[in-house]
Length: 383
Image (cartoon, rainbow, N blue to C red; front, side, top):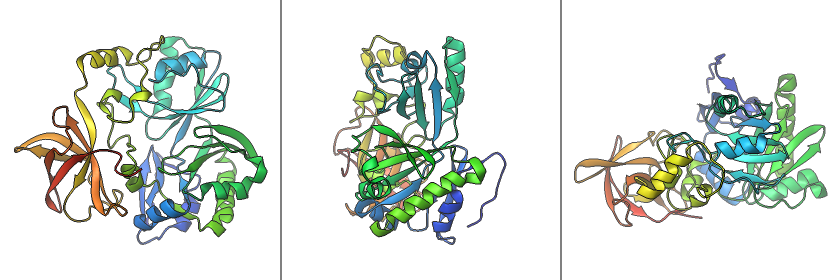
């Protein structure tokens, strides 16, 4: 698998270890958040089953932790996310939207509160640090906005807790969902959270100073996890789009972007916007206006007919496809894949209100498989 190194594209500190686990003839390499990473290791369907039945290790070091620290840290955070963080405890994580002045979603980070006056915004694919630096300056907030040397991995699947037990024993408490702790292991400084994008139980582990000494700490942690996971049949894998589509999880840049507002996301995300809190945030006025007028569109689940549409990461699904009714393009298919457990093609459609009723059918012109029929169904497709 060729890797053309380019000074303007970063490399994950786990990349050497990840490449060593990949099939060089079948794996796919991509760029996410200005960083090379593996889109799949050669067999994304096998990775799916390992996630469903066992445990997988993901390199997600393209997620950059934007640190906001200082006396005004809480006030600044309240101004940049749509959730009310006033009850956000130290040691707690919260999933949040960040919006622009029009209410469009620019990022959907996990917010980690490490100390009273220190937060991380764990951002997958947006230059959030530049946005935050500009807002901190223009708003006169007494905070430092930096990007520390932190590199996360995810340990996902039903055997994830067993692997963590083998690594930490009694030193790791029974973490509640969306909670975090600081720990050290063999000289490594770690932040551990019960979070992830796998649609199953799992953890994210953030290695501090991961890139020091030619990625020595990152590679030490990767090796430790693989050794501990060996008896649990751990597999190095990529973030699994089939599972996230099944589970009703959206992907920034695919299903949502800065033209989508949180009120247009649809079922299951209403709790992520608190328009009645006393604090203002960027985009609040626009979202209040949209709440009064009603959202323009919605993201719905669809079933699709036709042949196997692949795994989303294998090149079978272009970024978006038009969806037509009565010969007119009225919606967009943002994600689609074949679900091995449902044995059906499933996906998401961004559609105008009025065309979002269950059972509504659309025509999808696919560049390989011809005209497909997409039928609106409830989501998630499979919890």
